[in-house]
Length: 316
Picture 1 (spheres, rainbow, N blue to C red):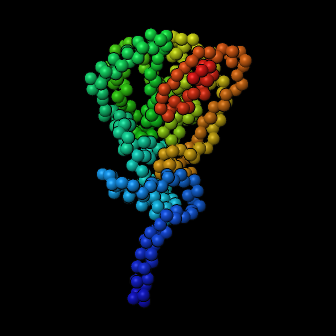
Picture 2 (picture 1 turned 90 degrees about the vertical axis):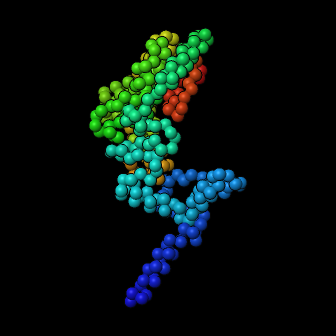
Picture 3 (picture 1 turned 45 degrees about the vertical axis):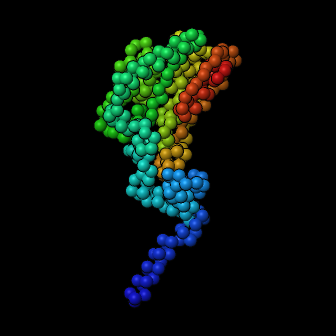
């Protein structure tokens, strides 16, 4: 009997192993992969470069047969069963919180979170000079400038990475303590109002668990801190609109976090919520107070702020 079953088992094994090659370029279908967001297939390299073998490898992997079932099954085993990240750029924290690692962009997010990074003395001095130069340039134009530091998720919800309760000194802490006073006032550290909002109502999340950004509520507290700071030295249209009482809060399930869906190929595997702020009716009196102009230059965190500032400024 073994004379027949052993060759049969080997044949089935090799057939299954080679099936993705036989079905080259055919992604296949898989009910559990319906929400996967697959990246665009890499083109075949058109010229010889130092990275040509890596480009050919990516071209081949993007076209291997049954890609959808393989990706979905791999994520189910590694992420779902073993709780092991399939992407070196993503760390799975406690209670389903996902964080970026230091692998990939060189920003040192977690090294900084551990208090392992510092700016050099020359970098501190250069930062101070640049801030003062910005202040003077803006002042010559009759403009108030403000440098706003958007906290990453580790800065606000670090307990889901490290449950020791100890908050190390980060590069920003070190920078703020070493800048001279005129340069220091140019910087608004949003960690303070966001941590205060979190402590006041821990049940309302300020950041997505499965994305790297703040949600509507976190963006609101950032907006309120910025507009309050600006109002100390310049007119602001109807500051009363920067009140949470002006909004109705709606909490909904959220399954579209980039870290979970795009990077771990695990839609629906991590529970998350979307905290939405719906503005109540703004009175004609408040609209009449709109005025002035504001220019926001920022990264992806600033996208969630613009609709709040539209309440106070007529031109962006």
